[in-house]
Length: 292
Ligand code: SF4
Image: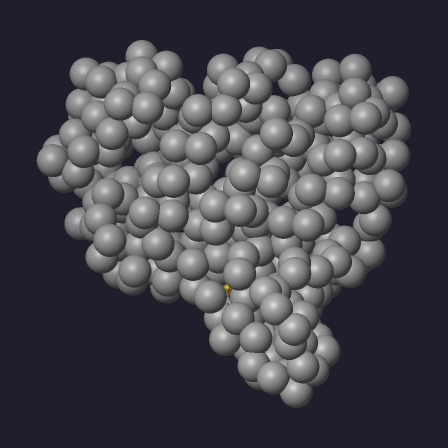
């Protein structure tokens, strides 16, 4: 278990504010945060999900998705439970929206995870590292940090797949340890992010921080949901903003399928995804469609 220090002297009987993400949950003693991963334990906000692994698989790097980072390689992909957002179309809601009591998990220390990845690499040399993915890794960012330090020492790469809604201090601390990231750009409006419990400016700041960091390869994904974020104007805004950071950011425009709380509409038409990808290509060098 690991902690993220809160500011100033805090008594065990007091309410504390979690500093990890823009929700800034105010937690009574023993209370769990909105992400279901962090808890007020004795006046400190503890990452209770630390080392609790719900999902473990070996995935092609292209599945993250990353198209311009070590193509053909594979990653040991690891996830816990919990997320700070409530996207109604979440494809991983069984773990992202659950807490410790709602999923099956097992303890896997950073040392054990890195050993496991090295074992897999001995079996299959295409395995090059670890991806922190499936649920939202940044609500348990200390596990990502501790695994990443050990993985790098062992010659493995670290990949982060995230919604990007974490405070700048968390992102700054992790970025030097991350070799590649895929961050969601879910839409280009405060309203959309607010509706999911996220923060638009925070997501943009994370993308901008990673884009500017010389040793971190960045790709970005937008899930196009019909009737929600599928207009030409919104794609213009998203892709031109990304191009302002770097025209060579690889951008994934992917197709929505009905899921979880969003069953009220059909899958996004393939033609819409292709059309929006063409708009993005006016601004960006590398645009890929997904789920089509
Ligand atoms: S990381 Fe979790 S507990 Fe902390 S502010 Fe975000 S949702 Fe709340």
